[in-house]
Image 1 (cartoon, helix red, strand yellow):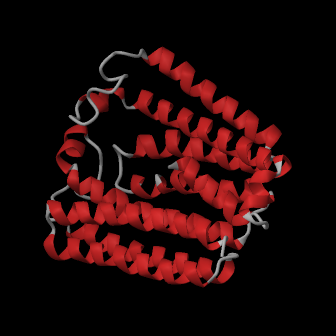
Image 2 (cartoon, one colour):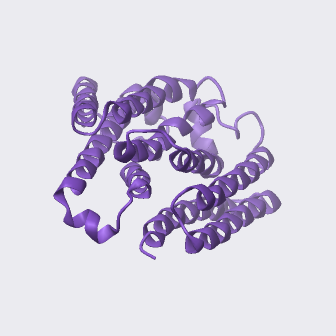
Length: 277
């Protein structure tokens, strides 16, 4: 998903037709380096995150059988592997893409491993810290192509920021028992088992995400098809969040989760399709 996010940001920034882009090695090779560097840094940060959460993963049913909690892979081996992946990825981005994109990837690693991960057991605000490493690759895709931070890249970044909150809030409610057992401070922790708080927050950020995606229609090189599609997807996402507020059950929480996937996948698809029209 991270690589697809970065690819969307990169493709949003190119100023030529897709067939020309893929047929030119001079244009395609920097893209491949950007995606490789993004994939390695993302994988490295995920490994390091798992290293830091071995004990907590052991206490949750859905993570207890992963390689580290189950003892299949040692903590030392995973740490070396995670650091190596991260450094190789940063090296590729710095020397074969541009320093700006490498810096964004570095900030993504730092925010994921050293901000989001430790905060999960301390404060509910970890949810918002966690949106940074999830959204920075979108901006990194844009900067990989342009070597600059501009409005279209920022708007795609904001779409990812806003999308993640309803997405992870739905997960927090679905797996609220597991998270509580592991000591993670989620919005469901502290008695809000009915889901009212997370439903209201989901609605707010679904609206903001819809606004950001609609503004992309105005400021990015996208046309009518993207605009109409983004509006339809935004209303569907919002409808699912409202349905969860009304019902507050497992079925509606899963609907919100699936709607979040549909929204983001649809936005990505519209970016790729619309530039061909």
